[in-house]
Image (cartoon, rainbow, N blue to C red; front, side, top):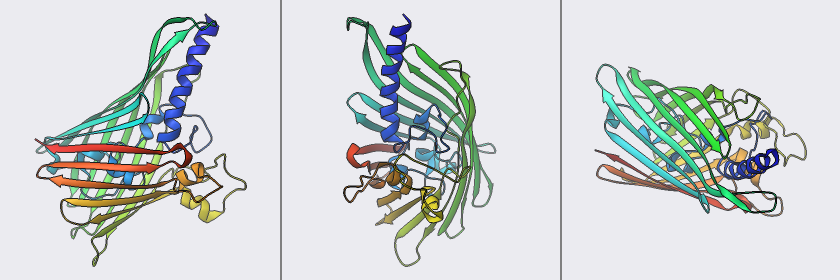
Length: 335
């Protein structure tokens, strides 16, 4: 029985690790070198975020579709707005996101959302390969938060996350907290933001050891150019640690190389109020996944947003080198 449980666990962990490896850019461990759990929380929930480099804390007009990126984003304009997005990773591995917002005068904007990652169903076998039953593997997080305008142009928000992962006979739950602030200048040409993500702890553990959650501190700045319909963004992540080693390092990177591993760059071309083209670059993903034998586009991303009346359609594509790419689709609608 012990061997059987070990076999089930190995299968489930390998399945989950493959999904995390591609979706979070290749790291099987947190950038500090310590193992973390619930890595699905790091997956960009919005095609817009994914297209702009996989991190978002300062992008204007974000709203409920990027609620998981910065809980300060939702505002009065998002009242009764709902968003959903979808990723097909490989075969039966799928991830779904949904979120909604309701504004209450004098209180603020309530946001709520679900993140769900399914790895499909698998056969449980004995040592001879005989099928005994089926088991499933999934990750799930339910989030709710509140944001409000603190002064003209400045919003603050916080969210709580109830998290569960189940890999066959192994299960774990956790509670985490996120908070953020978002500022937009009166002329709309400058914006900035900061967030703390997933500060929390396991409630029930997979094994006897309590493992850390993927905590992160992020900050960013966005500038719209005056003579060109283009927004440029710089976002800095993993700000609680400096060194971010990875298995591809032949030697330790210098100051600039290390700084770039904390940096993502995004550009959003505003062709009109209804059509936006997005480009992004994530240097950490490039450093972890690039092939040394050829010119590699790992870490690069692009996407498109189209708005028709009260409905916005978003799509993005992220390159992960020899692993291929991941396409995300999303829709946001005001009811």
